[in-house]
Length: 225
Image (cartoon, rainbow, N blue to C red; front, top):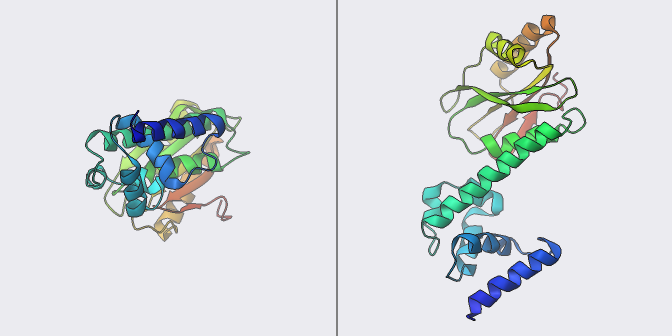
């Protein structure tokens, strides 16, 4: 058994015994890379990824072109890392469908941070919730895509789509590509208009989440709703 094969097995044994407890950041990445690179030592590529991108989140958010530039990573591993991120995003979405947003509003915030945080253009999305505060199945919809600093959203369409799905409440979300999630005057105005359009129909607007690359802003938590 070669040295790196034995090392891989020891990593897997540690994980099976106690999960990721005690793992260094690069060892977590190394463990992931063993699934995509079967016959090479992946310790150095894992350390280089941490050095370049800071942590696992930075690695998963990095463009594929930058991942492929890391020596020893090849073409398959970057795709595998993107699959890991996509699977984690899907997991968070399904978790919001099973959980109660009213009791734990961070569920959707975490989901959108992973889903929208690295986009280079602005998008506007809505989550549709039932009367119990659970996200409806496949209940997250992208209503518009825009430019680097604007994604048009229309209160009438937001309300129509919510009624079409039978939602009792909604959560709004969009991203800021400049890294600052602070709401603009336009963001605040749009939120007020959607609330006004929804109120006569007994449709509640529970939150408006703004996502930047490393931070989020919640209208609800800031007392703006």
